[in-house]
Length: 317
Image (cartoon, rainbow, N blue to C red; front, side, top):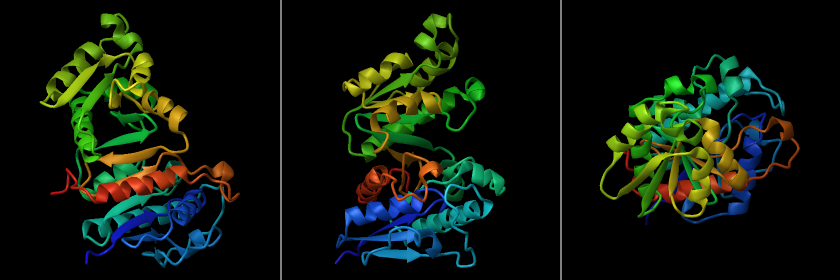
């Protein structure tokens, strides 16, 4: 008999809604004979929330860390614990103890306050796995969106864009769509400027960076369009003209996605040798500890982790 699939779920910042949505999601998913869900974190992270059921396991890899539960507060001790849980979870995935990883939200402010030199999960996971080329693919409802730049101030986005980064995002998205089971891969690439630059009148990034990157990324079986104005491309995507959109910066891509799938979006990290998904929301400190967080996004992230763990990972060597 095959051993059960083992899905690890890090609890994130315990002062946010991560532990709550993780437990609520697993309760709704229920026991599954071929799957073992492993919560990764401290017992005091789940104590204030729903108690785990018989089909759940709790692994505390850092018993020396006992962060206090202070709902709605950013604390360095919670951030350090969350980072340690991620570290051990990644090691477990790489050694085969876990088949996939789902991460509950962390606090970027908390990481910075604790002196942790990563702007977020994505960069930390890439560093821990030695991954040089990676991207965030976020999806929900009819949209799939990959970001070329992630947590970069808007004023610095143009300087952060390069032909290589844009082409890399296209290639990663192509492989990611195949991993997700899409046979047809029609990818639209956003322009950076209004009207995709209007032939250079409103900016030259489309001419000098984006169009050459699209040309460099072309390959058989992949349909590419762009640069497409960002104010029309998402309308076209939700009406089935495109299977994914490459956005140049964070809010360009996530504004439309969250409008359509705020409670059900999933984040998949492309390029990693492990399976990693997460809910597409943050710590939601404003409702932490009130027992009213919506677990829909976490449920979707867990379901996708299960699906992808059963398929060959294109980046696992």
